[in-house]
Amino acid sequence: MKKLVLVLAVVLLGISFVGCGQNDKWDASSTITVYTRDTSSGTRAGFMGGIGFDEAAEDDSKLASGFVIKDNTGILTSMTIDEYGIGYISLASLNDTVKGLNFDGVAPTVANVVNDTYGLKRPFNYIIRSLDDFANDTEKNITLAFIAFLESTDGADIITNQGAIPLTSTQSWDAIKDSHEVCSLDNSGVTIKFGGSDSIEKIALALSASFAPKCGNFVPEHDHTGSSDGFKRTQGSEKDGDNYKHVGFASRPFKESELGSAGTQGQLAWDAIVAIVHLNNEVSNVTADDLKKMFGGTYTTWDQLLS
Amino acid sequence: MCIWGYKNMSKTKTLLTNLKNRFTFNSKKELVDFFVRIFFFLATIISASFIIIIIFFIAREGIKPFVTDNNGIGRVDVIRFLMGDTWLQGTVFQSNLYGVGFIIINTVYIALLSLSISMPIGVLTALFIAKIAPKRLSEILRTTVELLAAIPSIIYGLFGSGIILQLVYNFAKLFGIQSSGGNSVMATVLVLSLMILPTITALSEVAIRSVRKDIIHGSLALGATKTQTNFKVVLTSAKSGIFTAAILGTGRALGEATAVYLVAGNARSGPSLGFFQTTSTLTSTMLQGLKETIGIDYDIRFSVGIVLMIIILLTNATLNFIKRRVGNVDVK
Image (cartoon, rainbow over all chains, first blue to last red; front, side, top):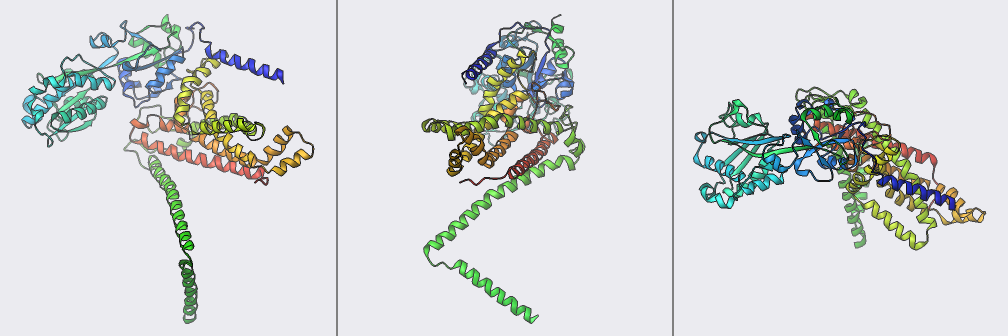
């Protein structure tokens, strides 16, 4: 009986050592395990777009074999465990329990996103109707006030809360609201229509929900169908159709063909994504092509990337 | 005609007298009794009808992908759906390639493995609490087990993704195997075993405690030791209750979604029989991306729900059949 207890104790001790046996050397010949979000994720669309691998945004069969599907936090915690894994998360969730990889030599920091040097990101843009193309002045002034609001520090807070990185703003809404007289009136009969990119829908909803009470309780109406509808339904071919919008959004730069009239377009935020690995991983810099080869299965081991 | 009418009338008369008897109350007590009976009956109707409503709702949504053309994507083939070894790897909204065959195998495989770990541990713990431990200790242990049974599954999931994934990852490394960050069959089985252990322990303990004293005394009087009695008499007498514990444990293991989703790795093809392979179960597949999807990709999750309900029914029926076969011993 005593022997049995002794054997059990030794086994238990062994298991607990396994728990802390984390000091082995990182082995570059190991297989890369790819961690991804599921196909309905906007972060996945942004990441795959950013590394030039658009076809994998909604198609798992394009990914390297043996991929693991997890959510944002799941990928983050997995990278604290799996020394040979690679995943991606939104920059807002990055912390020092994992290693955020430099992209094309630029470190993934908020500062580098705002000064436009960090590459793995996409702009969140807005466009409003041409200033002479509003049905009446009230609608025009509310729309302009909304744009002023999203560029204020109040708007920036909302954008940050939704996980994106706002552009630098200096003034609070309270400081500028006097120049928007329309907001002191009762606008409860006015409907302002928002549309465009569905990746920006959450931010747009949060912005309009917070702004409507500040601007005479106008009625925000959201119908987000995709980035290309952002321009089309405000200043493009559908601007006078049933689906017309006052404000459109696009989660990519506007194309040459989508340049609106002066003073109607701008950027509200950056959506930055960072590729992350385990702290023991020797890799610290990747390019878009490296990431595409890893997620696409061309590189199967880490030394293929390092060589 | 006339005779028939007369007979019928006498029948109606008896019926009326019966009804009259039923609705005449000789005392206040009988009246209260009547209303209490009605109240219980209503409660039963409500709880039973919810099950019917849920089944009806799931079935109505779940059949959609097989009978409509899903807004131009095409009808999902039932045979391929049930036998397939890949769960949608193409583009969402442009494909109807859903197969749950491998997921069914994964689900049953994982539930059986979990049961095979929890059953021996749970039953032996129950035996210890009910028969061997001193009274004070057994009371403390019983409370602990009941507490464990009340912990919600997300807590087990967080524990799993924080601790068990790390353990499994290191354990695999010990054998020179590189696992996907511990997301594997093994991690899932460990988490599920932990989850169903309290259920099995609590129910087995009740079953063991209700074994009649005179059976035990008989065994002891015949010269059997306490250990012999515990294993050969107590456990055999309580086997019916222990099987009930197994049935409920399996039900929980088959139906668990959140905790499994966090540690399984959500493989899209399979079946995964290796201990360190990533896997997926019916519930984790249903949960994945559920909040952000529409159209056929949403409806098909209800179809998976139907499959899951059928699997649970079949497993329960099988276990019940075995339970009847092993028989019953007269217990208190």
